[in-house]
Image (cartoon, rainbow, N blue to C red; front, top):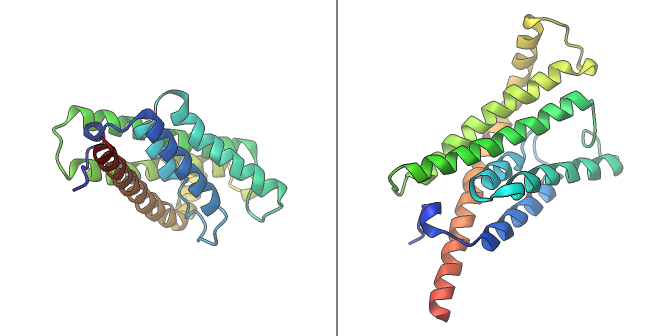
Amino acid sequence: MISSSLPNTAPSNSFRLVCGFSFAIAALVLRFAPFPENFACFGALSLFCGWTLAGAWRWGIPLLTLFAGDCFGHYMGIASFGFYYVPSMVCNYVGFASMIGIGMLMSRMLNQSSSTDFAPWGLVGFGAVTGSIAFFLISNFGAWLDPILGYGAGFAEIIRCYAMGLPFYRATLISDVMFGLGFYATYQFAAASVSNWERRAA
């Protein structure tokens, strides 16, 4: 049976980094898959790195992967990919950084709670939903700042911007939950497999 508690399985830092880089490559490749708009796994990658990695790696892997995707999309001339209005772009990056922070909070919450089979899965789902909301609020504020989108000044226009973004939020929420749980399940399966292999080898 695969253990469902990250702190109890205690995979090595090297194993966590390998998983982080593997998920980053998957996120980068899937960034250019023909998914619906806003359906991506950068949010799940940010949560995963915030949860499992330490130091500069937890910030560097997801944010540099996102930047690599923007660079590739920009220089390949792919429509709707690449660089755009800088304040809006900064808000998107801050939104993903907030998801890293939520992943860190999830890790602390699990360490401070009694371990149950459901607790980690519930936290991943809760973190994905909370992270997608945080990203929606921050990134859509950036959309309001973008003059190309034509929003006016004032609170009413900010609210209108958020209302216009709601149809796109569904894809964000679904992908964050789906990929978040998928990354977690893959990580736990890989950790259990490595642990079993090491026990047999010993």
